[in-house]
Length: 156
Image (tube, rainbow, N blue to C red; front, top):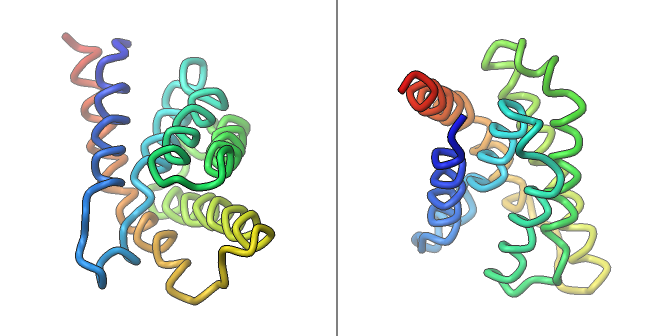
């Protein structure tokens, strides 16, 4: 498989992550970059995995000015978990995959909250968990889009 669709999907996810939104809509922003990482780790685990997750997380750390390694750690952990479970998760129907994505995003958010809490930068409010819900709702559409993109590139 060509690496161009993978790279372009990560760049698009990075742009969607940094896209300015109205103040009331920011809490509903899906975790685009993590969703794309989950998809490609599930689809081609031999090429996208822990190191890719770590690099993407480090990119987010630099972009947001957060504690260096905070997102890198959580992205690498999620990539590791998906790498372990990818054969099972690929066989799930989309609604079960969405539930799995919900759990993975909650793990990511919980670890980020833990690190931010230790450094004294954060107090948890219920809206903090909204990206997990919106990410799981977006997952079926993103999955189909990326799957079709990958198939189209292979058939050429």
